[in-house]
Image (cartoon, rainbow, N blue to C red; front, top):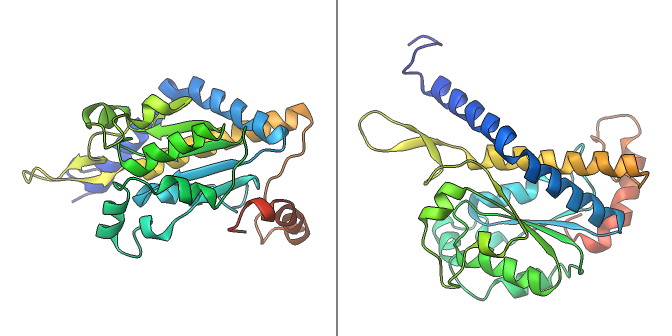
Length: 250
């Protein structure tokens, strides 16, 4: 099999992902700019940005946390029981269980005017939906990142509503039902998931937009520097000291 073979799984996947990212640029830019403005305004007021997802979507909560070039005012909402590593089957059951969102959000004590991103491909499982409801009751702005095609096909969970019905702003990661992009032979199975790549693409575009808007307004720019860069230690220590009280993961 040559590198350019039409049967190359790697090439088919990379081509499909590139096409999906292009679709995001063309279809989601207005929403990305709107989300960047929401984030910038919240941070200019001294607010925080929280990130939440269950299953593999929790990776996107960690994507924005304490990283080089990342905003220090970003805090992940993490619960190890729904993060796969303590038991993938159990975590899948938990994300479909009602009543967990309020106590989980209580740990972080977000303030009215803060922003919460919720990543959920289908947008129907109990925990992401109830997290949006809990956040709205507390006066947070909720931004959902979903796969619209998948979410439209999935029936509502126990809450009777979908994440897209609750969010103040919805972004489409251009995913397909089931997430995987590439059919494998005649098996009927697919491989090559998209949502982590497209979710990180959207999140980092939004946070970069927010950072540029903050800088343009003259507001402080709380951006972490890679630990291996000159002056990073003192710079990052100041940011950690500033945000540690509101981010239990620092």
